[in-house]
Image 1 (cartoon, one colour):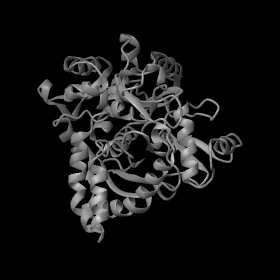
Image 2 (tube, rainbow, N blue to C red; image 1 turned 120 degrees about the vertical axis):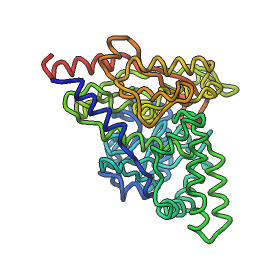
Image 3 (tube, rainbow, N blue to C red; image 1 turned 30 degrees about the horizontal axis):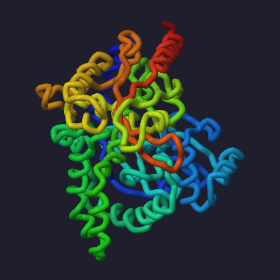
Length: 413
């Protein structure tokens, strides 16, 4: 088995993938395998019994939004009896931030990888604070979701089609040169995304007040572009998944209880370990004791070579996740030690335009004992409270050890 050749092919496919936002559609109509009694969630598979507070809250809120339940008790009953199925977003070519819940009637971004032909999906970003992805489901949260579906989504969908599509690889390349890292800091990327769509949003509706509200909603949310960025990264890593003999990680994801990875050369098997609590900065009135375990599919950004791996491009992120600009630089430099190659299109000005570390190699993680750096939001441990901070986290090394042992067994080493 020529591992180096397999890893070169894997990372080349990841780097050369060119995901483009081409449309917006209802999840039940466009996501493969979606049906009316299915909810998609972040991370590896989870049950109601083992789900964290934010995950249970997001499941409950989604089922209320779908008109299937009135409260958490009814949601619990539907899930535990199997009338409502829970499956990972990753099993359906999709990703979602934090709890990552995608329900049938939600609108999702549709991305096409123009290089390899695969598709990927993610939902719309609600903004900060008390939002569904952090487990909140108050009337205010549900009212916002309904407005997004009934008023915003139809206009946004038309605008995307009229624009001819948004090239997310090109957008990310530019955003990294403007101070983003693509995971927790997306201020530049969101501005670029809105700039590309604004003229078409105005043209897509005759209601100027609605167009104005949509633009203000998107403009006030520095995470507007996070979801299409995540879907773009999903498209990149999916193009690199399933390469025989590859030791490159193709998925990292958390559900609030378990952290899980998949490896390109090991098929669809999950390798999991308990999540940890992020270390970071908390909003006033909250402490580490209020924090839920690490949660979300947004680690797909690090898997594709940005996020925590591109912190050197975004020294200002330390004001949000803690640390110093030197720490941000060192985070990126450390990640080169566990990656197979450097990105061709994602480059870092402060490192003389060196490509970001790309292609987490399970061999290097186990050999060095260095685990990936991840930037993340922090959810309250109880449903309904929402975001309480942001910080840094590292995946448990046990997952990489499990994967390496499985690789040795499969390939006869």
